[in-house]
Length: 357
Image 1: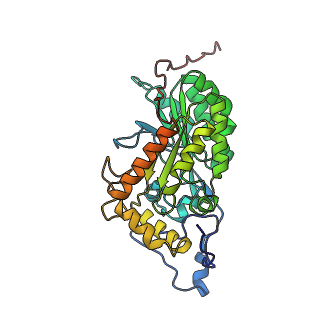
Image 2: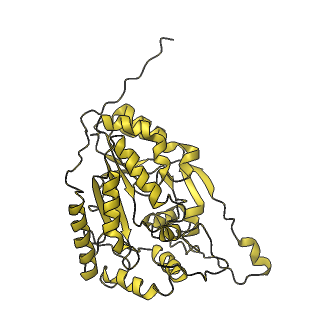
Image 3: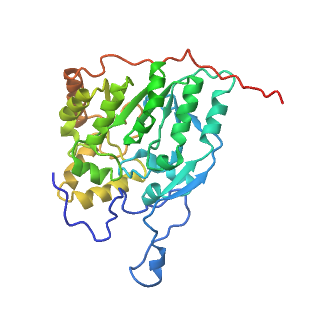
């Protein structure tokens, strides 16, 4: 698989999206009419900017019945990883930004997340259901190195004995290995690492600012050695680009110590359709038609899919072949043989130490 060497001169290296599609909630749209003259000043810098924001709430109940989580907690909005297919891109439009380059360059940092998390856990009647970090953007994206919000959230979860599920594709998670290990001792955490390809050339184009596949396998190994239950989401699989890697990925993650695996088939809802189409045409012009039609074949002729139960894995012949292949190699590699159940009985709000003065 060779990427096209004839990328446009203005290709944004290190970014997944190559433009800012129109925000569907915005009445106005701004376009650059020509490459010279007065319009030049409108070009935005490539540097990522962090927007310090505050949220009304931090834990969200997940109503969708097919995402595998009941509650999610997202300390960041937007993600510098820049994965071209990311479903979270569409949510950036609610904040007044574009799902394209804005999503990767304008990161909202929810600075009050730890305080809001404590308030949520201390609500009367909270049943200690598992909360997922993150259900939307990666909680260990590059911003976390500076702001350490995820680290503080884990410290609170450990203090309250609140069960946590996590998914990431960033090796920064190993910074918090001591906290996660202690949580695992109480059966309070399960971590999933996202690995959808072992092809470094594909990874660097489709997920430009993420850890390499080799690094992610190392994360799986380190977490497993520390006694932390770890699984892998092989997601999303792109038919015609990465679905053939299922056997090699599942063998590699099992050898690294993973005990579980899941997958999704790529779906391109909302603005993601135009972002991914543009990326695919620029990086795989000779394969574009084949890959695009294979994606459509998994979603009844569309590249988007909103059908609960079917949208994550699609249907049709190609989707069925992917499903059968995935199940076969999970079985061969002894994955998903035992379900991990976190302990919800230990949850307790710590007593406040009152001062005598």
